[in-house]
Image (tube, rainbow, N blue to C red):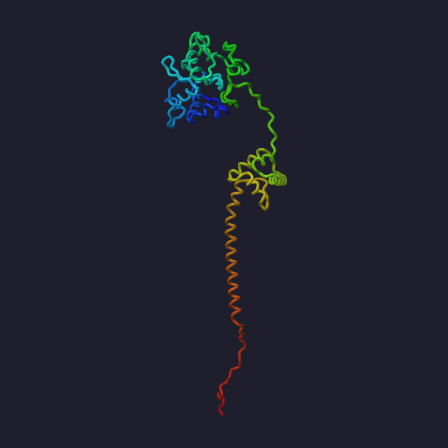
Length: 335
């Protein structure tokens, strides 16, 4: 069963690891999640591939050999079983106190010494082994059973001394109750227990947060003035809501604040819905203005044409008064 493990920042810049391919480095991390709390797991490349690279075409067996050649693990056979041992696992990981020991046969002292000579980069803690058995126990099974029966102790206690190892490193053998607590350290063993964070949270300043998000000093001051005039509260919740609304409108906070201030009636806050509505109304307003301008131009053209027509024709007066009828000569001459 895979387990949660710690990964430290210096893992990514380790001089030996960076010489390996990124798939091999990722495999090394995956092995941490598959091994037991002492760094042991079965050497089954196909099974490991399904656990770490279920959808990738990689050669896990070859990558395991590369990790062994670089001194990061040991591949060995014990009790007719192929096994893997991560020698430095206990120095950099702090398994959960309820995590059990697997039944994978342990790596013996003779093999450990032989591997350390072949690979000088591999430094094994010889206090983990004993010529007369496993940690002074008669058998490996008895050793594993005893480890699984050890009750959880507080971090300030020395688990190594509790196991009968007075010379054990009190730091590297301490179990942390929650294995999901990351240790911001390098690949070196933990040298001290970090202090508890201060319970006093830093004071929230609305203007400072605006400036951190890219709002200029001038815009921040003006925006706070508008908010004060409209009695808007400058709390952390109000700031987070402002950021969320700006993101909904696909704007940066600086763009949103600038939009609020450039309106004829400045906004003390920003709502994506307000912004969207104004953006939709603006094209229609522009279209109406364009239509009005088009009509106005046509009317002006017609007026100019009429004026030109009137100017080209002289004025003529028409006498609307009736004239007296003109009689034909001799029409009434009967005599």
